[in-house]
Length: 533
Image 1 (cartoon, rainbow, N blue to C red):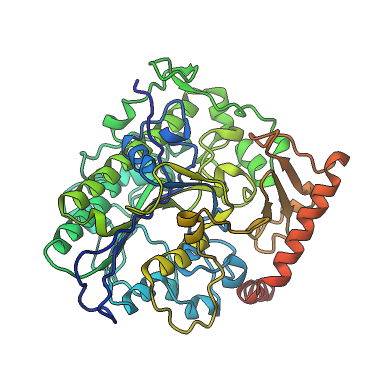
Image 2 (image 1 turned 30 degrees about the vertical axis):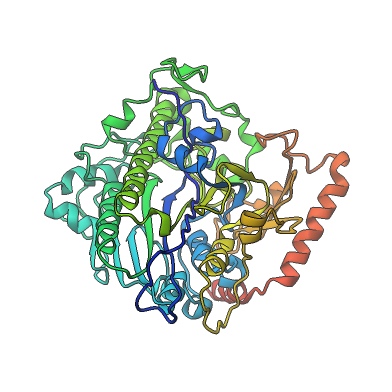
């Protein structure tokens, strides 16, 4: 088996000085293109350049070596729609009111999206792949081609795969988690068995996965823009390595899942996570429930009796990362061959992570995980040709909400009047001038847990699960505290250790400060609606 040399999920912003005068802008100033390469549920450590012993990601590794890498980038909530919405608006989840992927508040109607800001500044805007956004946050696209069936899109993957005659093969992939085909397909009503840990080898031909669709449309767009001088903003969003875990045989064969190995990467089997056997009672209630077999798709109780199921899932996850890496390489190659590489900002990131067997867990366990590094710490890589230092590592605390203000400053865009001012902060001074964000802490907050994160410590505060399962009492479980300088695996909960009392009190003070200074417009509205039910 090959040794992984490159990291998998990270945010890459590649900004170059445009050498032509773009037409359609509000001024004659040249504007760089911007492309965000985005994956879903990518654990930051599952990349070669991060020192992972098994995963193979040569293209992302190369990109990271030519860019600035943010080691301490975090999502504002470890769930898809809320996290993506912070990226696209620069707002916190407290202000927007997201509790999970569903629900609605007035803030979601009035927020101004990243695409809308780019469009106002004369950019042609594109979204290819999984957007998973709501209301005004999904506005501003000139062209949008998603993965899911959506009559408002210009095209979508489900319709494309139907036209190409592979509806059944994709339905079998989709059913590994959902037990039926995808909405909008001829197989939607088909009853197809789920798979252990949501993992099943795909029967699709290479070039027909959701990832291939995203790359294909992005490359077509790049080639079209090589023939004109208009600036573009593109969000190229991959569905994977999110579940269901359906790797192609080509990529799965790169990983030996027949046995646990020692991490040497020489055909000895994939390495078992160091905290794989963490005691179940250490975990928050929802994670305990799933570990004990509370979810019959994930059936972790069965997997602990047959660890081959765990290896299939973990190896499948690595294989999906490697496929994404391949398509990232193809997109970057297209930029190079089209002559647009030196005038294009490229961002590669993910909305949140995946446990990948850490803590003996699968996927992200959306309700109850908003404390663990595996879920909250996301890759962020930024390349600015001629300005950023190759391979520079930055340890500043940043969040996905900081990406929009960073792009606004880099591109020098005009911003419309905003009802809800951007709450993220630009990272440009940190990237280009060795500056500092001057942050002592950041907060990632869900309905059940608020994580207060500092340089060395993390406090997980259990909140009132207003909309959650009433049989899982989070407050009775209690808060969590980790000294990450001594316990990077986050298995020693020091909340009751008197040694840490001063640190715990300080992080609690930080959270109180955050609550006082962050408008809860949407959160208050959402809770009010929930209490009416």
